[in-house]
Length: 369
Image (cartoon, rainbow, N blue to C red; front, top):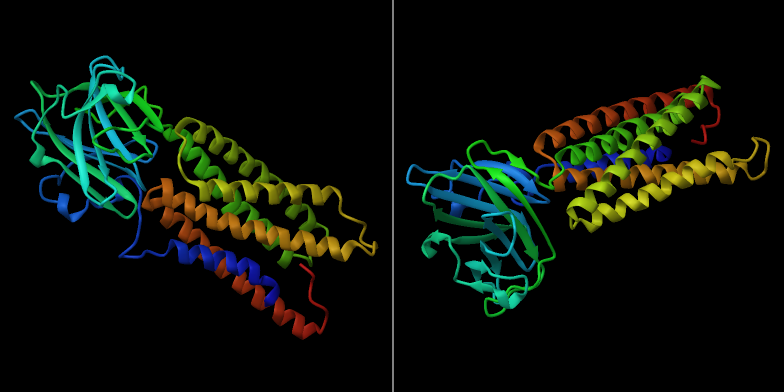
């Protein structure tokens, strides 16, 4: 059973990572529950992912008061949402929230009179708000900025600015933003226009990599270990499945690079693991073309290398899929991938038991894969 340990480790590790943890679970997007302090005044809001990890919750009342909760991944710095008349920064007003160095929460309106820090002026702007309605909360590595604004009439299509900076404001002076975006948001339908938030690219990246590294490549490994009796069919199936899986995974990585170039998502662990898994996959492809003949004295070393590098790639790919789902997918992705892992785990355990039973009955040597 030791030879299947790596494959089982993939499933076990990913299953643990996927398991729901009531106290520390970090769901993403609109699946997150609002912090309890916001539940009273900000319940029943419509919700839309809008850019990067930013999620916009909103509702308009009959008195033309707009209630907003803007959330995003957060470690330090500031997060802001601006309202523009022409889609440009200069001349806009923004609500900005942050946690100070002493742990005190801040949320203020800023007038964006220019592009330098000295021209971004605190406690000024054309937005009508009341300070006591402003709340900033950090919960499970996300910041929630809640505020209420009164407008002369109900908002329909509105030019919106989003930005974040990594420097903690000092004396209400905002450091230069690390990234920004602008788009038109329809507060009556929840639609955005001209947004740089690439939903389709995000789904393509996730779906391609999940199917390649989470379904096809594990199936190819299962064929190589448990179907050796059907020689040479197993070899062609294994090679074909792994090649298709690698191509689809490569396409998913290309989509991920394009996604990163658009949104500059700060997910170093996911990105680093993705690069590492890609390198292992390329090494496996090269190894296929450089494999020694079956009678070569070096063949056993090549087998050892090919088998364990493949298992290592699948292990880290499973972990990276989980990280990706936690960062950018809804609960339905977690459920689907968890179900897939359960099926693979049951299949591997069943086939491993049958393999060992057949080995004991035949008293023959175990296969090397």
